[in-house]
Length: 218
Image (cartoon, rainbow, N blue to C red; front, side):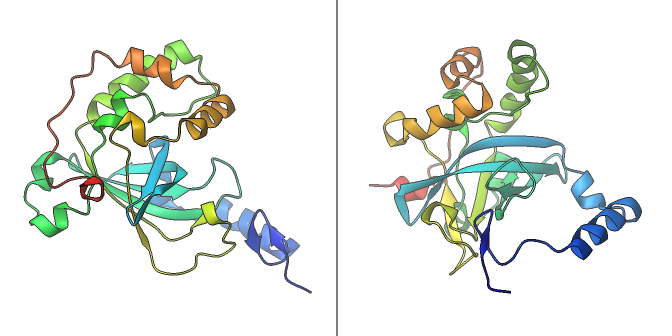
């Protein structure tokens, strides 16, 4: 059978035997690492090598400890979705133990949180009620540092994860943000970034280490 693109992935559609295997595996295997995922966050990642490029990222995160989180990054909150990268998040206490060159690979979350751009989608709960829980979580996320690599450059139309992993970072100022992308995201999720920004005014900003967000250095 000739190769084709399905959900922007090269290859023929899944065969019936694949579906049967998936059903059997889901019924009999534990999948414990996946079941430990406790949060879905949505934001935008920026290519450290080219800050004019950004991509929407759906994070599915697990808490490994009070100081360390790990997230699988997908291009969409659907099934199937492409696994496009990974992100690790650590507390300032751990970040400050790293050497300078390592610290430069990590990005802050202060702007993402206080701008309202980082969200926790939940279509099953009314926005007003969910924002209370979401805002509490943002109080934890705001001080974390993230290290992110993307393996699949879906923004340029790749149908396979090609090339070397790309270090990603986050936006740190209003003028860096492609707000048209944020508006499109908000419409799809039925949220308002501006409203979330207002709801988070009570979240105290954090002091960001000078070595973080290094790709924005002039």
